Length: 168
Image (cartoon, rainbow, N blue to C red):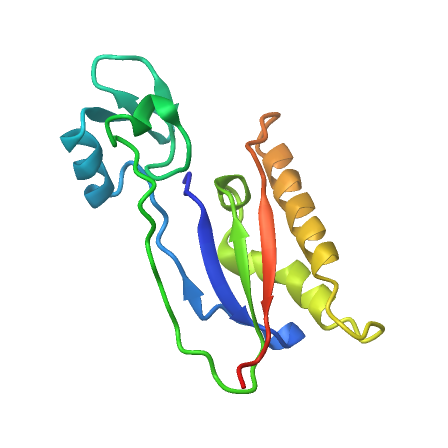
């Protein structure tokens, strides 16, 4: 499975953290995404994973159907930068965080596993505040390890953790 960028929001609180919202992955083999790609002059080919090509060409071979800045397919809107917008109701007094990560994180890592480094560094009792930098560093290291377990290639791995203070 080769998902696109994924964002999910989770409440703080260490070991009690849980996923409260997870976005849908934008992959070329998703029926709605494939319909858009084909309507704008692209094709979807599956060889291990679904990839997008310009009709009649052997490029670009993207494994995501939405992205920023890929000029070879953005010109004709084959791949779109149109965002999916999700929302959730925050509970008063609860702290949340957003984890934004590239497909290099999600290719071999299921969302619940991404919680582990965050839980570890969020609830570290020796600190006055969560060590979000260390949590993200551990998450990226975990993703790199998973790639190495699946061969020598490692896709781009980017992650950002955003702390959302309790409302009010």
